[in-house]
Image (tube, rainbow, N blue to C red; front, side, top):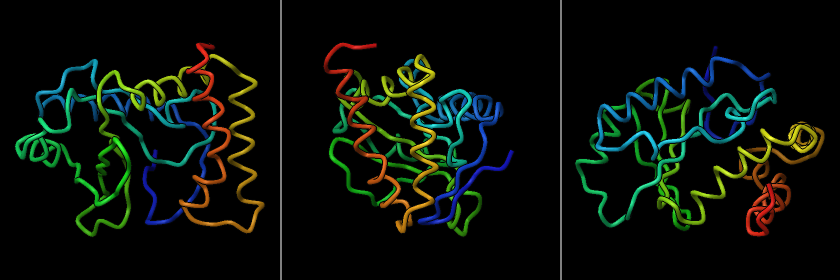
Length: 179
Protein backbone atom coordinates (compact mmCIF):
# COMPACT_ATOMS: atom_id res chain seq x y z
CA UNK A 1 0.00 0.00 0.00
CA UNK A 2 1.41 3.34 -1.06
CA UNK A 3 0.21 6.50 0.64
CA UNK A 4 0.87 10.10 -0.26
CA UNK A 5 0.23 13.03 -2.55
CA UNK A 6 2.43 15.96 -3.43
CA UNK A 7 1.20 19.53 -2.97
CA UNK A 8 -1.82 20.25 -5.20
CA UNK A 9 -1.79 16.72 -6.65
CA UNK A 10 -5.10 14.89 -7.15
CA UNK A 11 -4.97 11.15 -7.81
CA UNK A 12 -7.56 8.49 -7.02
CA UNK A 13 -6.62 4.87 -6.38
CA UNK A 14 -8.82 1.79 -5.83
CA UNK A 15 -9.96 1.11 -2.26
CA UNK A 16 -7.40 -0.75 -0.15
CA UNK A 17 -8.14 -2.82 2.95
CA UNK A 18 -4.82 -1.59 4.38
CA UNK A 19 -6.23 1.91 4.89
CA UNK A 20 -8.24 0.72 7.90
CA UNK A 21 -5.15 -0.92 9.43
CA UNK A 22 -3.05 2.18 8.75
CA UNK A 23 -5.63 4.34 10.53
CA UNK A 24 -5.69 1.98 13.55
CA UNK A 25 -1.89 2.04 13.79
CA UNK A 26 -1.80 5.83 13.45
CA UNK A 27 -4.51 6.22 16.09
CA UNK A 28 -2.48 4.11 18.55
CA UNK A 29 0.59 6.25 17.84
CA UNK A 30 -1.32 9.50 18.39
CA UNK A 31 -2.77 8.20 21.66
CA UNK A 32 0.72 7.15 22.77
CA UNK A 33 2.05 10.69 22.34
CA UNK A 34 -0.94 12.75 23.53
CA UNK A 35 -3.59 12.61 26.24
CA UNK A 36 -6.30 11.92 23.63
CA UNK A 37 -8.75 9.08 24.24
CA UNK A 38 -9.91 6.55 21.66
CA UNK A 39 -13.39 8.08 21.28
CA UNK A 40 -11.81 11.41 20.20
CA UNK A 41 -10.05 9.98 17.13
CA UNK A 42 -11.93 8.68 14.08
CA UNK A 43 -11.14 7.67 10.51
CA UNK A 44 -12.95 9.89 7.99
CA UNK A 45 -12.72 10.81 4.34
CA UNK A 46 -12.90 8.53 1.35
CA UNK A 47 -10.35 6.04 2.72
CA UNK A 48 -12.92 5.31 5.46
CA UNK A 49 -15.69 4.59 2.94
CA UNK A 50 -15.71 0.90 2.02
CA UNK A 51 -15.17 0.00 -1.60
CA UNK A 52 -14.68 3.38 -3.30
CA UNK A 53 -11.61 4.88 -4.86
CA UNK A 54 -9.90 7.63 -2.90
CA UNK A 55 -6.90 9.90 -2.73
CA UNK A 56 -4.19 7.80 -1.03
CA UNK A 57 -4.18 9.95 2.11
CA UNK A 58 -5.61 8.92 5.48
CA UNK A 59 -7.95 11.57 6.94
CA UNK A 60 -8.49 11.61 10.68
CA UNK A 61 -10.84 13.78 12.71
CA UNK A 62 -9.82 14.52 16.28
CA UNK A 63 -12.39 16.05 18.60
CA UNK A 64 -11.04 18.25 21.37
CA UNK A 65 -12.98 19.98 24.13
CA UNK A 66 -11.71 23.48 23.45
CA UNK A 67 -9.11 24.90 21.04
CA UNK A 68 -8.00 27.35 23.74
CA UNK A 69 -6.93 24.44 25.93
CA UNK A 70 -4.55 23.03 23.31
CA UNK A 71 -1.10 23.82 24.63
CA UNK A 72 2.39 23.53 23.22
CA UNK A 73 2.78 20.06 24.78
CA UNK A 74 -0.21 18.80 22.78
CA UNK A 75 1.34 19.87 19.47
CA UNK A 76 4.74 18.50 20.55
CA UNK A 77 2.99 15.16 21.13
CA UNK A 78 1.45 15.28 17.66
CA UNK A 79 4.87 16.09 16.22
CA UNK A 80 6.34 13.09 18.04
CA UNK A 81 3.59 11.02 16.39
CA UNK A 82 4.75 12.44 13.04
CA UNK A 83 2.24 15.28 12.53
CA UNK A 84 2.97 18.94 11.85
CA UNK A 85 0.51 21.79 12.22
CA UNK A 86 -0.16 23.42 8.85
CA UNK A 87 -0.67 27.10 8.14
CA UNK A 88 -4.15 26.35 6.78
CA UNK A 89 -6.92 28.75 7.72
CA UNK A 90 -10.30 27.05 8.15
CA UNK A 91 -13.16 28.11 10.39
CA UNK A 92 -13.43 25.97 13.52
CA UNK A 93 -10.65 23.61 12.40
CA UNK A 94 -6.90 23.15 12.83
CA UNK A 95 -5.16 21.01 10.19
CA UNK A 96 -2.06 18.91 10.73
CA UNK A 97 -0.29 16.59 8.29
CA UNK A 98 2.17 13.72 8.23
CA UNK A 99 4.73 13.54 5.43
CA UNK A 100 6.79 10.77 3.86
CA UNK A 101 10.08 12.42 4.82
CA UNK A 102 11.81 15.62 5.95
CA UNK A 103 11.43 17.22 2.51
CA UNK A 104 7.75 17.79 3.45
CA UNK A 105 6.77 17.29 -0.19
CA UNK A 106 4.40 14.34 0.09
CA UNK A 107 1.56 14.22 2.63
CA UNK A 108 0.30 10.80 3.72
CA UNK A 109 -2.14 11.70 6.53
CA UNK A 110 -4.25 14.67 7.58
CA UNK A 111 -5.61 15.45 11.02
CA UNK A 112 -8.66 17.69 11.21
CA UNK A 113 -8.79 19.05 14.76
CA UNK A 114 -12.31 20.18 15.57
CA UNK A 115 -14.33 20.72 18.70
CA UNK A 116 -15.76 17.47 20.02
CA UNK A 117 -19.52 17.03 19.58
CA UNK A 118 -19.86 20.29 17.64
CA UNK A 119 -21.08 20.73 14.05
CA UNK A 120 -17.88 19.81 12.17
CA UNK A 121 -17.32 16.72 14.32
CA UNK A 122 -20.82 15.47 13.55
CA UNK A 123 -20.68 16.41 9.85
CA UNK A 124 -17.41 14.58 9.15
CA UNK A 125 -18.55 11.42 10.90
CA UNK A 126 -22.06 11.56 9.41
CA UNK A 127 -20.68 11.86 5.86
CA UNK A 128 -18.63 8.67 6.34
CA UNK A 129 -21.46 6.79 8.02
CA UNK A 130 -24.12 7.90 5.53
CA UNK A 131 -22.09 6.84 2.51
CA UNK A 132 -21.12 3.53 4.09
CA UNK A 133 -24.83 2.84 4.78
CA UNK A 134 -26.08 3.88 1.31
CA UNK A 135 -24.55 1.99 -1.61
CA UNK A 136 -26.20 4.09 -4.34
CA UNK A 137 -25.04 7.37 -2.76
CA UNK A 138 -21.55 5.94 -2.28
CA UNK A 139 -21.33 5.02 -5.98
CA UNK A 140 -22.72 8.45 -6.96
CA UNK A 141 -19.95 10.11 -4.93
CA UNK A 142 -17.29 7.92 -6.49
CA UNK A 143 -18.58 8.72 -9.99
CA UNK A 144 -18.56 12.45 -9.20
CA UNK A 145 -14.96 12.24 -8.01
CA UNK A 146 -13.94 10.44 -11.19
CA UNK A 147 -15.82 12.96 -13.38
CA UNK A 148 -13.51 15.67 -12.07
CA UNK A 149 -10.72 14.30 -14.26
CA UNK A 150 -12.80 14.92 -17.41
CA UNK A 151 -13.07 18.65 -16.65
CA UNK A 152 -10.56 21.42 -17.29
CA UNK A 153 -10.22 21.87 -13.55
CA UNK A 154 -7.09 20.80 -11.72
CA UNK A 155 -5.51 20.85 -8.29
CA UNK A 156 -6.86 20.20 -4.84
CA UNK A 157 -8.83 23.47 -4.50
CA UNK A 158 -10.72 22.78 -7.75
CA UNK A 159 -11.28 19.15 -6.72
CA UNK A 160 -12.74 20.22 -3.39
CA UNK A 161 -14.94 22.86 -5.05
CA UNK A 162 -16.12 20.32 -7.61
CA UNK A 163 -17.40 18.00 -4.83
CA UNK A 164 -18.71 20.72 -2.50
CA UNK A 165 -22.36 20.71 -3.55
CA UNK A 166 -22.57 16.94 -3.09
CA UNK A 167 -20.85 17.11 0.31
CA UNK A 168 -23.17 19.91 1.47
CA UNK A 169 -26.21 17.88 0.35
CA UNK A 170 -25.11 15.07 2.68
CA UNK A 171 -24.49 17.52 5.55
CA UNK A 172 -28.04 18.82 4.99
CA UNK A 173 -29.37 15.31 5.60
CA UNK A 174 -27.72 15.41 9.04
CA UNK A 175 -29.53 18.64 9.92
CA UNK A 176 -32.78 17.04 8.70
CA UNK A 177 -32.16 13.99 10.87
CA UNK A 178 -31.93 11.57 7.93
CA UNK A 179 -29.84 8.38 7.99
